[in-house]
Amino acid sequence: MSSTTHIVKGIAIAFKHGTWLVTDAQFVSPGKGSAFTRTKLKNLKTGQAIDHTFRSGESVETVDVQRNKAQYLYSDGTDFHFMENDTYKQFSLSADAVGDMKKYLLDDTDCYILKLNDNPVSVQVPAKMEFTITSTPPGERGNTATGGNKEAVLETGLVIKVPLFLKEGEKIIINTENDTYVSKA
Amino acid sequence: MHEKLITDRARITQRVRDFFTDNNFLEVETPIMVDIPGMEPHLTPFETTDGKFLNHSPELQMKKLLGQGLKRIFNITKVFRSGEKSNTHNPEFTMLEWYRLNADYKDMMTDCENLITSLTDKYSKPFKRKTCQELFQEHLQIDLTSDNFAEEAAKHIDVSQLKTWDEIFFKLFLNFIEPNLGPEPIFVTDYPASQAALAKTKGFFAERFELYINGLELANAFSELTDATEQRHRLEEEQEERRQMNKTVFPIDEEFLSALDSIPEAAGIALGLDRLIMVLLDKKTIQEVILFS
Image (cartoon, rainbow over the protein chains, first blue to last red):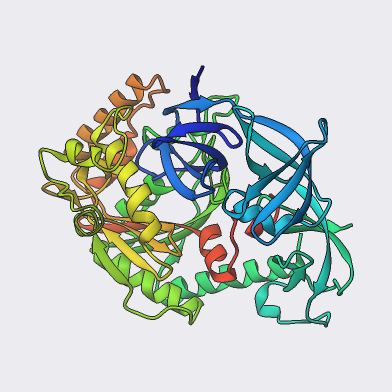
């Protein structure tokens, strides 16, 4: 069963012979024309990520996707292993299916599993997550040309910009939608 | 709010003012609240409780000033566009506009190059220039003037829900051209005449360009249409378009049309100052450079 809707972030759509999760949807206006919506799409089977721009209001066919709470357990080097919270059922996803999300996954991380016809196809993480800074240059002053920010490497290897006052070992909260610093934890 | 951002914004805005003052431009102020906003069918102005509108561009007022004989003018003003919110849009933003009498859009390209290289040494003159026709040929092998434009487009995108030639143009442009414009400044020039209601046209195309840096549209410029009869005709077409879209149909600004009679040749440009600041400060979103956002 399917229905059509306008494109918004978070829904899954049928597009180009595949099922895609809309991971971002931004208004764009070419000025002298109708409004458009620039989306980032993630293929739920292959993990492939693409950009596509629709005219705002264009109808797209939606696909029902289940979203259940889960926990990330570990990676065996090839696959990523998870456990569904309600059923304690364990399952694995390929590195391609996990895609970009792996930069947020630490053992025992709480996350969401997306299922298509009962098959786990993809993983999502909460919008706000806590991490420890594993390395960042010292110094309160830093380079003033970079807007008062410096780079910090987090436990997962993810690199984000943080304010100059933060030090190694401190816990921070980040926004996973755009990989930006939110606050100290 | 970051103290660094406050001072950076002030410094950049001051240097923009210095650039124009040094080049003999006169700074002018235009109203934020107007009786008749611009007619662009796809822009929605905010309406006040007493039937006025918040301006979505000072363009008409700037041309009225040109009509009074001012030769070089610039303006840094707040403009408002209802419903526009994204990482690169804010419903209220700061617009930099400048106009030159006896000039065309090529002079505005030179101004852009000089302004931006006066603010940063990241880029060097001259900036790349490509016409829309060249870009469509290069990325899609499509001829914009072709009678089979829609069929050619259908090889690349779903056109089934698109209603007009312009919508097909934009969907192709946004999917295949804009993402490939690259990080360096580039002037995308000579847009289809149908997308330039206030510009001078030459056949199928208009003397209009947009400046992109980092794939972000920063500015839109024209050789201004100064023929009042032709301008009236185009405004009437836009009124009709608004009517068909069930949008408020604004009256024609007669003061604007009569000002055109006193303008020989002119060129003008609107540049999003917040977006320029994004580029200069290397920020990803417009919210990061607006003080109260």
